[in-house]
Length: 487
Ligand code: AMP
Ligand code: MG
Image (cartoon, rainbow, N blue to C red; front, side, top):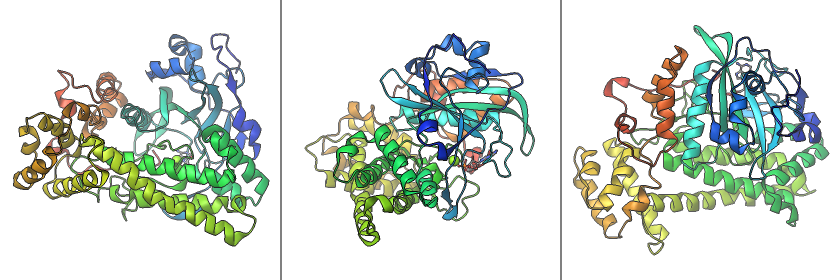
């Protein structure tokens, strides 16, 4: 492995240098016959990486960790985490590596990370591999989320490795090259806390503050400010998931970021007919991470973060607990405020409509959607047309439109702005049947459906002729949708 003159962008090894206890230097597995399946050219450009160089031989080696750019110091990160409520003291990157950080065109530090790059000391029983389908799934879902304006890790590329992966059947292997503002997780803090080394915990917290919440450094209690900032960021994030109908599916504490970005696109999916009990993940049998439980699950995870931070909050443990409890109490108010703001925008209501009126209306509408099994995305999109005088499409989603008509009259009186609504209510989301279709074709070697779907969902608000099937719900014979972890 050697540096290449084609890639002049400097990599930093900041995490590796500042927090050596939280990462093990490691190398990516050699690829056999790498082939670029998808490259995010706009993101490459933001990162200062030349998209045409990335498509060349050295580019593919760089994207798979087989050629190290100047400054890169790959590490497998260690973290702990509560998985479905049960604590695991040592998880970590079992099949992933942090290559290093790049300062992007906006001056922000971004992690470049690999998933599917081979076994590491944290692999436990896993094979360290990833299959083409699930890595493309992360690419589609994360880029759709970004286009919807939801904070998320990004996908730079998916490269097939030429190496088979054995799941229920033999599948083509792949590496996802992921970009994130960091990979610090609630589980990273749990791990640091569990070492008993308070200075390590402090260094980790200082690193997080510097990267994500620099203003906290000037607060009277910077670590309390950090906790409050993460609480606010996660409350906002989960409110956006809820408004978009996104079900994360595996909200374990190792899958919750400190930055407030969505991470870990394993079993996630977008809901179609509105139903708070929706669960897609095959392993979430108790529905712990059902759509309607997501705010509570986030709050539970933040309590684990608060526990990890206790030694930094106050030297007296009792007082530290009181400080942490107060900070956690902010979650409910932050969440309600963020959700109300978003719901009001989705209903096209102006500032002079008070927030309580808007929230009550939005909640009443969701009750109707649940009762009548109405598609969340389509309804909000059609409401935009209803605001501009044509309510037929929205009405047609209800078998019996009488209760909807009553709701609509009360809403229309408030003067919703249909034009603004079309800028916040998407027409194209990665619908489950379309995602499955694109992944099945790609696994067989046909990338056309993937690119067509990406074209639709990366411009989600812009209705375009010819894309009608990307706006339509799943056909009736698609049946109940199931997703899988550990793919
Ligand atoms: P996840 O459910 O994707 O958040 O993964 C939970 C843990 O399992 C993390 O520590 C992953 O690195 C690890 N893991 C998942 N799949 C594999 C695999 N195929 N090989 C090794 N480790 C894995
Ligand atoms: Mg994970």
